[in-house]
Image (tube, rainbow, N blue to C red; front, side, top):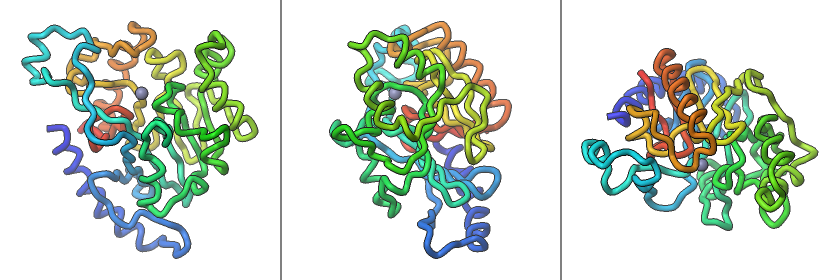
Length: 283
Ligand SMILES: [Zn+2]
């Protein structure tokens, strides 16, 4: 049902995008030429966001991760697991490319770099990285063999998330996080919740999953990071956390608050573990 809603919206905005794009086309810049079910055009009619699937094959979350009663799981038809993905999102705004999270990394089977090729992009093309949080399926793709995968990207991470992982966590638990921040230290900016980042992307408090977990909003798009790992359960029952949520009480509160916010404002949610294609339109 959710997918149908999303598709309807995409078809609608797709037409607007085509007419707008023909006026502003620049021959040298790789642009999104087709709008399909993997792409959302924002309400400014100029910014596009592309879903990039990082995981290979199908991905389902084990129902037992959520602690929901059998009767509820069965009534939702989720006995075999909850459809999910590992996803990143690519925004094209004013001729620049913004990548939200980086997936698992190619050495762990992540497909992100292959996905970029399909749009005639290389890692050098990425102008900004906006990071939702510091788990390995989000920052794993930042570094390969000790070097930045995205050498030209200005990297934005939440100040709260940075402090929690880099300053407050024991050193035997944050090796990947420390390496990523070290490798990008000359192109790193820490932001506060409420701050508006380049290209008008606002950082929103979504803490709970991790101490500084961040959502991002531009126009009618809300990048929700790991607000939900099992949307088919948690959309209707946001009180159920995944066992990866580090602070369960705060995670459930953020989930309820942001789902309400998205519904009230008719936002399109882009989630790193939503089922394919990882957009949900809250019409
Ligand atoms: Zn995740």
